[in-house]
Amino acid sequence: MTGSTETCPGCGAVLDAEEGPTHRYMTSSAACWRRFGDLLAAEYSIEALMPTHRLSVDTYAVQHPGNGSRQAIQSVGLHLARLMIHLGSPKPPKEMNNVMLRLGTRKATLHLLERPERFAMTIADVAPFVGTERHAEMVLAWAQCSWDDWSEHHGYIRDWVDAA
Image (cartoon, rainbow, N blue to C red; front, side):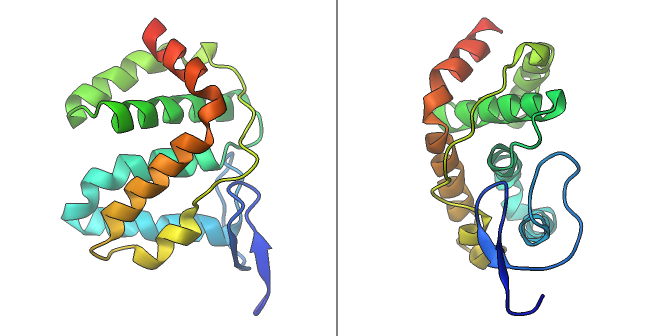
């Protein structure tokens, strides 16, 4: 597929087409999934980037809302909840883990949310900065844009978190 591009069915990123694996329920192109893998590899191998890891995972997950399965619905809801908390009132990792465990007990109550029409920023915007001094800055911007893109559902997510 040399020279051709494809649009990721999840986030809409236009990337050089390639063959390869994708996630089992988060719908993406192989090229998008690989770039996310590259980002994770950098975060795991550069200790200074680990604090951005959860933001990266949450952001990628909400941009690839999947196939409408119960697991995909719960994934989007929980990742949106963690983005909201992290961006609005960050907590130390252990406390955030406890909050997410509590929220996880209620995940069956999450509803299917209509995905945004488009995402203002995708992995394609972050990929050139993976592993560089701008990595964390770009992930934070990506996370904030993604949260903003889901603005139609902010009230629902806030209410759902508050009910926990």
